[in-house]
Amino acid sequence: MAGELKNISNEEFRSIFDQYYPMLFHLGREYLQDDDEAKEVAQNAFVKLWEIRGSLSNESNIRNFLYTIARNNCLNCLKRREVMAVHHDRLKYLEMHFNYEALNRMGPDYLEFSELKEKIETAVSSLPENCRRVFYLSRFEDKSNKEIADELDVTVKTVEAHMTKALKYLRKELQDYLPVLMVITNFLN
Image (cartoon, rainbow, N blue to C red; front, side, top):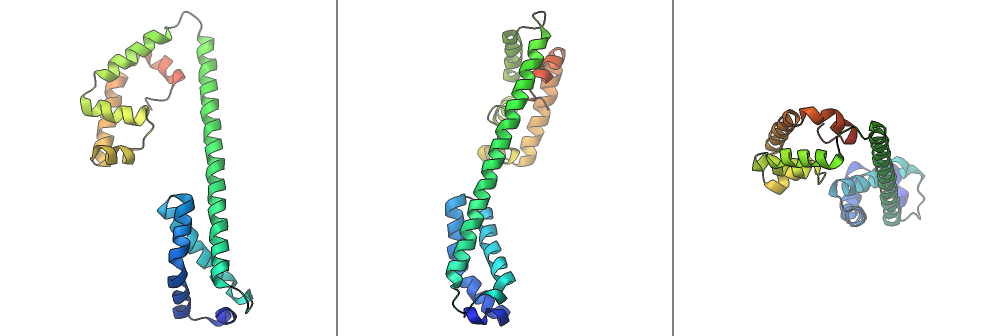
């Protein structure tokens, strides 16, 4: 079949796709733990096969070729994730460093951190239960609106409404402390 790839019909290519796609998808899913990325890895292997089909020799092993392309795509995806994680960690470090420097410049005349923390905790604890839970999951557990909606078995719109209500309330309750809060953290954004 490899020698015939140059002039392969759509139906023949579809047959190759149907035969090897499950193997490539499972390979991607095993290493990436993400169905969407696994689909993309498998599909990209077939795109590459289609693009270079005319240059493959009669002795080419389609299965090995597809497997190698999919494996390399998985490795590239994992490398991208690693780079993104390092970049994210570096940004978090820089943000923390700038916040530290800003606090350091405020001097002793400013509000004590423990007092500020107490004010925040009091304001958050006075939120209605659903708003408080949504706010906590979003700001303290760093969950997305979709993750919160899934966990609480509500819609994303409901989560957004609770966050809007919580942030509006907290801005009002902590308005005297907002300049300090904006330097310390971005939790009211």
